[in-house]
Length: 246
Image (cartoon, rainbow, N blue to C red; front, side, top):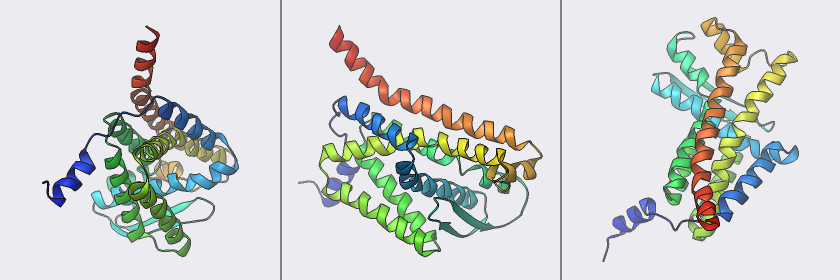
């Protein structure tokens, strides 16, 4: 009889049944609709904002800055406040970490999804939500994180294996696809003169490298993660379709 700890370990790192090819393809289509739509994008973009601000916060901790907190706003913007040297490599890395965070997390999730470690993705998502909850300093931000935690908890504890697989595939696709649009939106606002304090402009002031070049770097990271992660998630589907056709 396995112990309770062994049961949790098996649940966390055990390999889930391989999902039917309909799941990766359907969730890809749904995620694409969420990203290109208007109202739905504004509703679900907050997920990317949470990860974006978590990226700033994690990097601030890694480079030795003192975190003051995170604020999430109803317009899907956010801000992470930390204390330390206002210039230097640590500040550059902290500023740089926001926009790539959803893309990199999506890439990590894609590796775990292909390895069929669905529950592990849910556990990592829970750790992310808990970490941000401890740092949020405004009421709307707390409400947003609690709502995200409720959805995540419902899927993790009450969802069937199929429901969990659908949810994980959908959030992974959304992170990968959705990481590109905020970079494009930032540049659109910059072109109109409405984002003079964007991450790219802050990086330009810190490094004396043109802001447009930083925009291109951020876009390249997002597209690279989308390409690699998307290929990994669709490769089993293509292989199965090819085997069936052959």
